[in-house]
Image 1 (cartoon, rainbow, N blue to C red):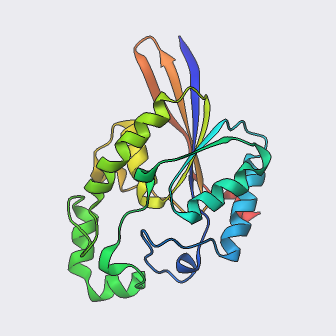
Image 2: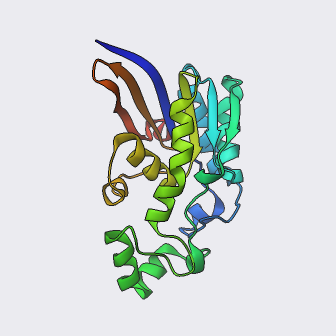
Length: 208
């Protein structure tokens, strides 16, 4: 026996001006750029015929804007989860990604290989992983059967990790592009609930 009991759409926000320039933004509350708005519109078109009952979102405006554009076709309930805020990039916020990798290669490599390593003045992925857990529990406990989460790259990796029972280091290895969406299916089986990844990091809607 295998019954589908919940569908979860995991979305990363559309691009901001910082994304357009390859800048770290973390908890900076940037709005969508014109490109990000167009990306969100294309994603909204991709999802318009899907059922979405409730949207859980980060407190940052770029995630909320993306969710609102998608919701034009759904009129879903909105629920903000503060723990879904993006990873605090500390001293790196506003700096160019490629410049940081070139000038601070040892710190960057440590961050990639050790989820407990902290960005100078910011967070570690372990900290992000731990703080998203209560929000993930709310998502799973929700009575709604079709759920969309609008958040961020690092946060979405942590959410995936909790849903699939992955260790933080493994969860970090999943790509998450701007305005990509993923779909996870929650089944009720004889052995309990089972969560599978049906689609991951789909950006086909952005290529058309």
